Length: 313
Image 1 (cartoon, rainbow, N blue to C red):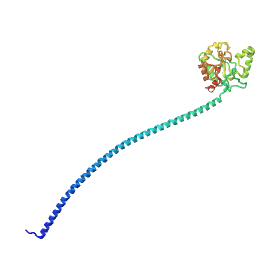
Image 2 (cartoon, rainbow, N blue to C red):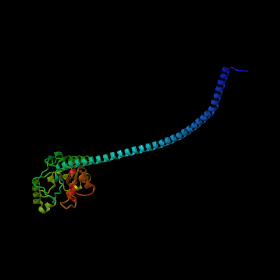
Image 3 (spheres, one colour):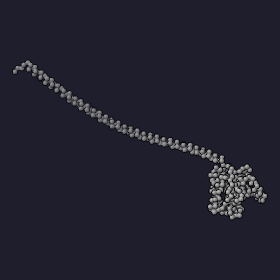
Image 4 (cartoon, rainbow, N blue to C red):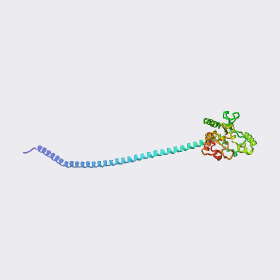
């Protein structure tokens, strides 16, 4: 069977096309397979890289967590240390401030004490009985007259230091509440009055005897205006025998509460025993003497002077 040239040419073209397609197919299959293999390896490599990266990220997270913990701990410690430092500094400042305030208070107190002392008569606690001399020009800064109802002899005017009167009045009134009668027998005496009195005693008893119970002018505690002689009822207006009375016993137990002390107790080195003679020395000193069973003239003058600032407290 013979084909025309066109038909023959057509079949040749088709066969050629089929051959080309077949060749292309057989040639492309290995490429596709290779491609798949390549892509598979790439995927495996990528997966491995992802795992490695994930591991690295985990390690980084752990390090970050550890670092964060360390930082938080450091921050906490730093904060605590800072707070402790601030607290310590505050305490230091408070301590310094307290010290300054204390020093200022001390200085203020010292200034107040100095001012107080400057207004207090330094003679009030001097030991005058045969020790110090009080000149004829001295008299207390302010004398007041004792109301007559407190005097044993109402017709006799007596004076006392103005600041001491409230203490004496309180003592007499308190004794009365306890059933004890106390009256003023003698109080302030000037230099001239003491001179006159001592002269009378010297004439009556002789100078030697008078010296045993009466001070010379300038050496009498009465000139200070701080000293009184006390008497009670039942002894006929004389002070001898006062030591046997309930009034004297009451004074021994209570006079210190009002700032008074017995100047000349038994066996003293200055004058005969004078149970009626009481001197105001301030509550602090009188209480010290009472508690320690001592007497005013037993103390050194410098020790006595320490109580001057509190004599009217």
